[in-house]
Amino acid sequence: MKTSAMNLAPYLSVLLFILVGLAVGGLCLVMGDFLRPHTPDAAKNSPYECGFEAFEDARMKFDVRYYLVAILFILFDLEIAFLFPWAVTLREAGVTGFVAVLVFLAILVVGFAYEWKKGALEWE
Image (cartoon, rainbow, N blue to C red):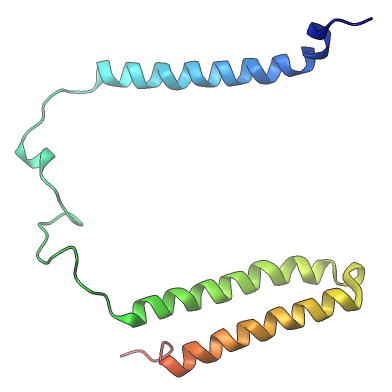
């Protein structure tokens, strides 16, 4: 009859890996705190935006076209991310997989038509 310690032997390397990772991370944090320069001044502590002082309110409203372009990016990004694996496994997917992708593409076409109707593809 085996003891319970023998059953946990394969997990010893995982536990060791976690402990070494935590030790290295903790050591880096502690050494960074001791080795960093302690010279704060007004320029280092001041808030900045892209290297210069903020000139508008942070709560300003964005144009809705910004969000429409973001939605457009997500639409085409998801399309590409799902179409490549589908194309590779088309033979195994069969008719059901083909119909599922047609439904997926139909939903994307509806999203694209919405973007087109809202004028997200027109640049000034």
